[in-house]
Length: 283
Image (cartoon, rainbow, N blue to C red; front, side, top):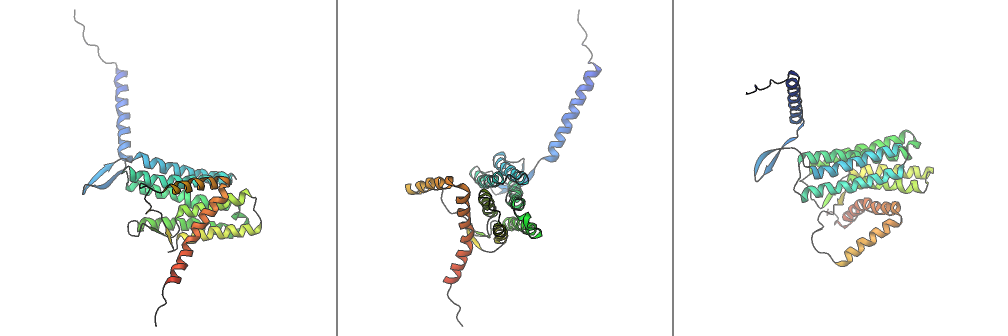
């Protein structure tokens, strides 16, 4: 005796409809929030959906380090804040290299990297320097801190506009990661030695102001981009790198301050030397 097929339960039908509705809403949300950008592949334009995970993962990590530096600075942990800025600097250098090595460059990644740099190398160093010592100087302190942040924003905007139109061997103006490292190393060093006298306050004011102004200057800085990391090098180069790590580990804050202080000074020094070597104009 054959059995008639059972009729679906009304509650099951409603539940199935609700599940389909949720799936439609989720699909619509994904479509609306999806990143779509045009790229040139094999000489023709293609529309590409989604983002590359690996390089943006490094950028997100750098963004987190910059945010951590801000929080640590507000909480008075200036050593941790300075270290976080250096970690953000390392991660920022890796995301671009990873993108080039894996051929995963994108316009989205470039914009995301700039926004991450603004927090990590603009807002974070300025805020850390202000909360540690510049706030003791009053209005001048926060004006100089804002000057640094504004110059970092202008530096990043100019860099994005000039990308591809300048010699890759040189940076025009002090790179924002190096400026941030100089400020962070100064905070780390002076704070470690409890250097809070009025003279150090003025020195920190000068450091932050100089770093900001140099970022938007037309002074050229060596970019190190023409160094071939894939080619063979003499054994002594590797030995020098190992010795460099050993020296830095002895007193990290002081060594990093000397290292980045030398790089910051290299731009104006080389500019003066080039001007002195220039033959005088004939009458």
